[in-house]
Image 1 (tube, rainbow, N blue to C red):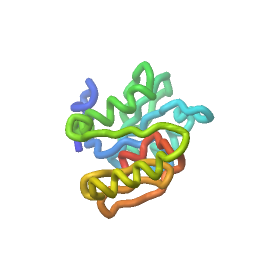
Image 2 (image 1 turned 90 degrees about the horizontal axis):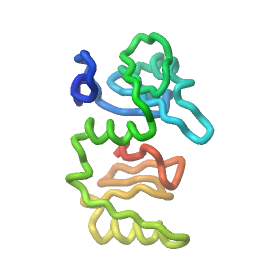
Image 3 (image 1 turned 90 degrees about the vertical axis):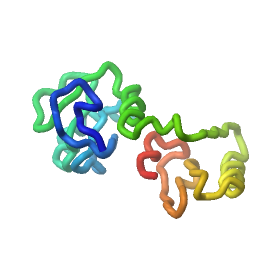
Image 4 (image 1 turned 45 degrees about the vertical axis):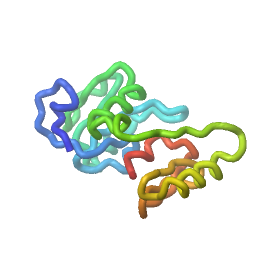
Length: 151
């Protein structure tokens, strides 16, 4: 958890505990990032995110005045990863990442790697969802945009 002022140059002591890009999943403590998808502009869901309790919003265009702090950036899609790195204390510096690509065998290969390294030492995100330790869940896509925040 960090204060909004620790994440952005903004005079606010609001506590931020999570990041979301789905307005339906927004809750108090979350910062809602209005990313641009193939079929959706999440700027269109700002009012829903606020209604669901988000504490701040990151936008890439003017959206008028809202009840929560608004942080305007050039590109929200690029900002999403930067924000997650800051909020979660740069986990990429503490973790080893293995990416597997190709046409066939990705799920099998990642399942074998997780079995060899141990589920307590190795997380998995892919076609079969995500897992780490005893935490498991489904993902909408084989390469989800934001499943890591759920682990």
